[in-house]
Amino acid sequence: GWHLENGVCVLCPEGSFCGDPDNPDPDAPDVKSCPADWPLSDKGAKSQNDCYRKCEEYAIEGGKAVPVSDKANYPKVCEFKGVSDSGNPCEIVDDKCVETSCNGDFEMINGKCEPCNRDHALTYQKTGNCIVASCEVNYHPNGQSCEYDVQECTAPNAVSAEKRWDAKLQAFGVCTIKECEEGFHISSNACVSDQQQCTVDHGTGIKEWDHVANQWGKCVATYCDAGYTNDPDLVDSRDASKPCGVCRNKFAVDGEIAASSYIRECEIASCMYQGEMYNLEDNECKPICSVVGYSDETGTEKWDATRKKCVRTCNAGYTSW
Image (cartoon, rainbow, N blue to C red; front, side, top):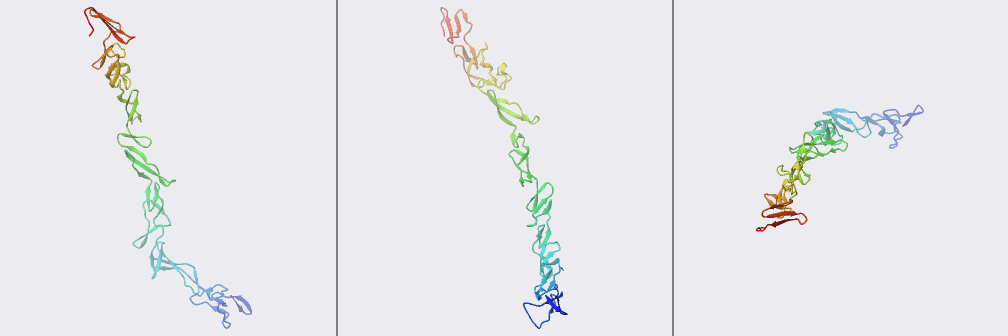
């Protein structure tokens, strides 16, 4: 790296090298010039391997050849990588740029890298090709596309329902019902029938949803237990306002309870003290014995409350039948 000049040791000048430890030659000059294809060297070069050539970018068809390094030391040659006019990597073949792969925001179409053009996409990932990284407002990435944040979904008896994208969870939320089929209404995010069974005193019924008031209407009786009715023509006047009121024929004409049991609603099965106090006729319990007592030319009769029996006494010349 040094040579003797006018009795003084100085650094070997640029473009040359001084001394070659791998090839000592006592007859060789102290300063040797670098080879023609590697004409450059820094001051103090010690061997031919310190000589180098500059590697510079040059144009090729469809792009440019970019040096891998800015110089190549002897005996190496410059290495280049191809970059197409669109900025994508390419292979250099006969001074032509041949694209074989594309950057993340490009895709290969007919042997050429074309810019990604996905609807509503803003940016693309660096890995892969046309993998969406970000989208316009109200859209989110889904592989190579932008998906709308609101999607239709299905639910029982629903006409319209949708689910929304949750950016934090990176998933769609629950299916939210917007409108139900006719005969249904929304309740707790479900389509519920506008008619539901309900219970009333001594019976069951149906209640209907009031879409104006947004609440259930009153329970209207559709079935009453035996001895009760919702028929205004059969109900006792004192229970007329009730969904299921006491049957009017439960009472005799004297106002006393006369019916003992019912088959269904107001159809009497039996009367109190059947054959003694009342008889069942035409679905009514009709008195056949007087509580206060009764007499005529044939005899007398009177209800004995203690024995629960009608006591009849016939006059002379008459008999009981």
